[in-house]
Amino acid sequence: MTISQAVAVNAPLRGCVFQLAPLVTIDQQGKVSGPVIDYFRRHIEPVIGRTIEWQGLNVARLLSNLESGECDLTPLLSYSPERARHFRYIDPHLLLLRPVLVVLVPSRLHSVERQEDLYGTSIGWSSQAIVPPLLQHPQIHIDTLSQLSWEHGNMQKLLRGRIDAALFSNDISANHFRAKLPAATRLIYLPVTPLQVHIVLTKSLGDANPELAQRMRQVVERVPLASLVEPTPRLWGR
Image (cartoon, rainbow, N blue to C red):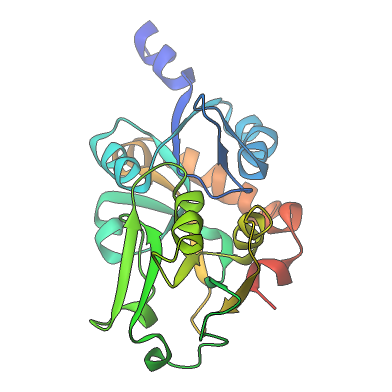
Protein backbone atom coordinates (compact mmCIF):
# COMPACT_ATOMS: atom_id res chain seq x y z
CA MET A 1 0.00 0.00 0.00
CA THR A 2 1.35 3.41 -0.96
CA ILE A 3 1.38 6.37 1.43
CA SER A 4 -1.44 8.03 -0.54
CA GLN A 5 -3.55 4.85 -0.34
CA ALA A 6 -2.96 4.62 3.41
CA VAL A 7 -4.06 8.20 3.88
CA ALA A 8 -7.20 7.55 1.79
CA VAL A 9 -8.11 4.51 3.89
CA ASN A 10 -7.86 6.53 7.12
CA ALA A 11 -9.25 9.82 5.82
CA PRO A 12 -12.56 11.04 7.27
CA LEU A 13 -15.65 9.96 5.39
CA ARG A 14 -17.83 12.69 3.94
CA GLY A 15 -21.35 12.38 5.32
CA CYS A 16 -24.34 14.16 3.81
CA VAL A 17 -27.54 14.62 5.77
CA PHE A 18 -30.83 16.45 5.37
CA GLN A 19 -32.65 17.98 8.30
CA LEU A 20 -35.05 15.73 10.20
CA ALA A 21 -35.37 17.70 13.42
CA PRO A 22 -34.95 16.93 16.23
CA LEU A 23 -33.26 13.70 15.09
CA VAL A 24 -30.97 15.68 12.79
CA THR A 25 -30.70 19.46 13.06
CA ILE A 26 -28.78 21.88 10.84
CA ASP A 27 -28.18 25.29 12.44
CA GLN A 28 -27.76 28.62 10.64
CA GLN A 29 -23.99 28.14 10.50
CA GLY A 30 -24.45 24.75 8.85
CA LYS A 31 -23.45 22.74 11.92
CA VAL A 32 -25.11 19.33 12.04
CA SER A 33 -26.19 17.78 15.34
CA GLY A 34 -28.79 15.51 16.94
CA PRO A 35 -29.25 11.92 18.16
CA VAL A 36 -28.54 10.42 14.72
CA ILE A 37 -25.17 12.20 14.50
CA ASP A 38 -24.36 11.21 18.10
CA TYR A 39 -25.14 7.59 17.23
CA PHE A 40 -22.59 7.61 14.42
CA ARG A 41 -19.92 9.23 16.59
CA ARG A 42 -20.43 6.92 19.56
CA HIS A 43 -21.19 3.63 17.85
CA ILE A 44 -20.31 3.65 14.14
CA GLU A 45 -17.03 5.58 14.01
CA PRO A 46 -15.17 3.52 16.66
CA VAL A 47 -16.05 0.30 14.84
CA ILE A 48 -15.15 1.42 11.32
CA GLY A 49 -12.02 3.23 12.52
CA ARG A 50 -12.83 6.43 10.63
CA THR A 51 -14.43 9.72 11.55
CA ILE A 52 -17.26 11.26 9.55
CA GLU A 53 -17.39 14.92 8.58
CA TRP A 54 -21.02 15.93 8.16
CA GLN A 55 -22.50 18.41 5.70
CA GLY A 56 -26.13 19.54 5.86
CA LEU A 57 -27.92 19.61 2.49
CA ASN A 58 -31.43 19.58 1.13
CA VAL A 59 -32.67 16.25 -0.24
CA ALA A 60 -32.14 17.11 -3.90
CA ARG A 61 -28.53 18.25 -3.37
CA LEU A 62 -27.83 15.28 -1.11
CA LEU A 63 -28.92 12.80 -3.80
CA SER A 64 -26.89 14.66 -6.42
CA ASN A 65 -23.75 14.72 -4.26
CA LEU A 66 -24.08 11.04 -3.40
CA GLU A 67 -24.40 10.12 -7.06
CA SER A 68 -21.43 12.29 -8.06
CA GLY A 69 -19.26 11.01 -5.21
CA GLU A 70 -18.99 14.37 -3.45
CA CYS A 71 -20.50 12.62 -0.42
CA ASP A 72 -19.61 9.11 0.77
CA LEU A 73 -22.68 8.25 2.81
CA THR A 74 -25.98 9.38 4.25
CA PRO A 75 -27.77 7.96 7.31
CA LEU A 76 -31.52 8.22 6.68
CA LEU A 77 -32.46 7.40 3.09
CA SER A 78 -35.63 5.55 2.18
CA TYR A 79 -35.54 2.88 -0.50
CA SER A 80 -36.59 3.10 -4.11
CA PRO A 81 -35.51 0.88 -7.03
CA GLU A 82 -34.15 3.94 -8.83
CA ARG A 83 -32.01 4.95 -5.85
CA ALA A 84 -30.79 1.37 -5.41
CA ARG A 85 -29.32 1.52 -8.93
CA HIS A 86 -26.94 4.25 -7.79
CA PHE A 87 -26.32 3.62 -4.09
CA ARG A 88 -25.44 0.78 -1.73
CA TYR A 89 -28.10 0.28 0.97
CA ILE A 90 -27.09 -1.23 4.29
CA ASP A 91 -29.52 -3.64 5.93
CA PRO A 92 -31.19 -3.73 8.36
CA HIS A 93 -32.90 -0.36 8.30
CA LEU A 94 -31.70 2.26 10.75
CA LEU A 95 -35.16 3.53 11.70
CA LEU A 96 -38.76 2.66 10.94
CA LEU A 97 -40.93 5.76 10.54
CA ARG A 98 -44.67 6.26 10.11
CA PRO A 99 -45.69 9.31 8.06
CA VAL A 100 -48.15 11.80 9.58
CA LEU A 101 -49.94 14.97 8.60
CA VAL A 102 -50.17 18.13 10.67
CA VAL A 103 -53.29 20.25 10.14
CA LEU A 104 -54.71 23.30 11.86
CA VAL A 105 -57.52 22.52 14.30
CA PRO A 106 -60.25 24.10 12.10
CA SER A 107 -59.30 21.76 9.22
CA ARG A 108 -61.98 19.48 7.77
CA LEU A 109 -59.47 16.64 8.05
CA HIS A 110 -59.84 14.67 11.26
CA SER A 111 -58.59 11.30 10.03
CA VAL A 112 -57.48 9.65 6.81
CA GLU A 113 -58.87 6.23 6.03
CA ARG A 114 -58.53 6.19 2.26
CA GLN A 115 -57.02 8.23 -0.56
CA GLU A 116 -60.33 9.94 -1.36
CA ASP A 117 -60.22 11.66 2.03
CA LEU A 118 -57.34 13.77 0.74
CA TYR A 119 -58.80 14.82 -2.60
CA GLY A 120 -58.68 18.57 -3.08
CA THR A 121 -55.95 19.12 -0.50
CA SER A 122 -52.54 20.75 -0.84
CA ILE A 123 -49.84 19.05 1.23
CA GLY A 124 -46.39 20.46 2.04
CA TRP A 125 -43.39 18.15 1.67
CA SER A 126 -39.67 18.18 0.85
CA SER A 127 -38.41 18.44 -2.72
CA GLN A 128 -37.10 15.14 -4.15
CA ALA A 129 -38.28 13.16 -1.12
CA ILE A 130 -40.35 10.06 -1.87
CA VAL A 131 -44.09 10.72 -1.75
CA PRO A 132 -46.11 7.91 -0.11
CA PRO A 133 -48.28 6.11 -2.72
CA LEU A 134 -51.39 7.11 -0.75
CA LEU A 135 -50.70 10.75 -1.66
CA GLN A 136 -49.93 10.15 -5.33
CA HIS A 137 -53.08 11.28 -7.14
CA PRO A 138 -53.94 14.14 -9.52
CA GLN A 139 -56.50 15.44 -7.00
CA ILE A 140 -53.85 15.68 -4.26
CA HIS A 141 -51.35 18.51 -4.70
CA ILE A 142 -47.86 18.03 -3.21
CA ASP A 143 -46.30 21.44 -2.56
CA THR A 144 -42.56 20.99 -2.04
CA LEU A 145 -39.77 23.09 -0.57
CA SER A 146 -36.06 22.68 -1.31
CA GLN A 147 -34.68 24.77 1.56
CA LEU A 148 -32.69 23.19 4.42
CA SER A 149 -35.35 24.11 6.97
CA TRP A 150 -38.18 22.67 4.89
CA GLU A 151 -40.14 21.54 7.96
CA HIS A 152 -40.26 25.09 9.36
CA GLY A 153 -41.11 26.46 5.93
CA ASN A 154 -44.05 24.10 5.51
CA MET A 155 -45.39 24.85 8.98
CA GLN A 156 -45.30 28.56 8.15
CA LYS A 157 -47.21 27.88 4.92
CA LEU A 158 -49.73 25.91 6.96
CA LEU A 159 -50.11 28.79 9.41
CA ARG A 160 -50.73 31.24 6.57
CA GLY A 161 -53.27 29.00 4.85
CA ARG A 162 -51.12 28.33 1.79
CA ILE A 163 -51.34 24.56 2.28
CA ASP A 164 -53.94 22.35 3.95
CA ALA A 165 -51.50 20.01 5.70
CA ALA A 166 -47.79 19.50 6.32
CA LEU A 167 -46.39 16.01 5.77
CA PHE A 168 -43.78 14.59 8.15
CA SER A 169 -42.07 11.22 7.99
CA ASN A 170 -42.64 10.63 11.72
CA ASP A 171 -44.48 12.02 14.73
CA ILE A 172 -41.34 12.98 16.65
CA SER A 173 -40.48 15.59 14.02
CA ALA A 174 -44.11 16.63 13.63
CA ASN A 175 -44.57 17.22 17.37
CA HIS A 176 -41.24 19.07 17.54
CA PHE A 177 -42.49 21.66 15.04
CA ARG A 178 -46.07 21.68 16.32
CA ALA A 179 -44.72 22.88 19.66
CA LYS A 180 -43.12 25.89 17.94
CA LEU A 181 -46.22 26.98 16.02
CA PRO A 182 -48.40 29.74 17.56
CA ALA A 183 -51.60 27.95 16.58
CA ALA A 184 -53.49 24.83 17.64
CA THR A 185 -52.79 21.86 15.38
CA ARG A 186 -53.83 18.25 15.05
CA LEU A 187 -51.77 15.16 14.18
CA ILE A 188 -53.17 12.65 11.69
CA TYR A 189 -51.52 9.27 11.23
CA LEU A 190 -51.61 7.98 7.67
CA PRO A 191 -52.72 4.40 6.90
CA VAL A 192 -49.48 3.52 5.13
CA THR A 193 -46.70 1.00 5.58
CA PRO A 194 -44.05 2.38 7.97
CA LEU A 195 -41.08 3.84 6.12
CA GLN A 196 -37.71 2.09 6.39
CA VAL A 197 -34.71 4.43 6.29
CA HIS A 198 -31.19 3.11 5.85
CA ILE A 199 -27.54 4.05 5.97
CA VAL A 200 -26.55 4.41 2.33
CA LEU A 201 -23.06 4.38 0.81
CA THR A 202 -21.97 5.42 -2.65
CA LYS A 203 -21.60 2.45 -4.97
CA SER A 204 -17.86 3.06 -5.34
CA LEU A 205 -17.25 3.18 -1.59
CA GLY A 206 -19.39 0.12 -0.90
CA ASP A 207 -17.81 -1.91 -3.71
CA ALA A 208 -14.25 -0.96 -2.74
CA ASN A 209 -14.79 -1.46 1.01
CA PRO A 210 -17.12 -4.43 1.66
CA GLU A 211 -15.77 -4.69 5.21
CA LEU A 212 -16.93 -1.13 5.89
CA ALA A 213 -20.52 -2.00 5.02
CA GLN A 214 -20.28 -5.21 7.04
CA ARG A 215 -19.06 -3.40 10.15
CA MET A 216 -21.83 -0.82 9.88
CA ARG A 217 -24.38 -3.61 9.48
CA GLN A 218 -23.10 -5.30 12.62
CA VAL A 219 -23.41 -2.08 14.64
CA VAL A 220 -26.97 -1.48 13.46
CA GLU A 221 -27.92 -5.04 14.42
CA ARG A 222 -26.21 -4.86 17.81
CA VAL A 223 -27.19 -1.31 18.83
CA PRO A 224 -30.49 -0.28 17.19
CA LEU A 225 -30.78 3.48 16.86
CA ALA A 226 -34.48 3.34 17.76
CA SER A 227 -33.62 2.07 21.23
CA LEU A 228 -31.55 5.21 21.87
CA VAL A 229 -33.65 8.04 20.45
CA GLU A 230 -37.25 7.21 21.41
CA PRO A 231 -39.37 4.21 22.44
CA THR A 232 -40.36 2.20 19.36
CA PRO A 233 -44.10 3.12 19.61
CA ARG A 234 -43.22 6.80 19.13
CA LEU A 235 -41.42 6.01 15.88
CA TRP A 236 -44.14 3.71 14.61
CA GLY A 237 -46.89 6.07 15.70
CA ARG A 238 -49.65 5.34 18.18
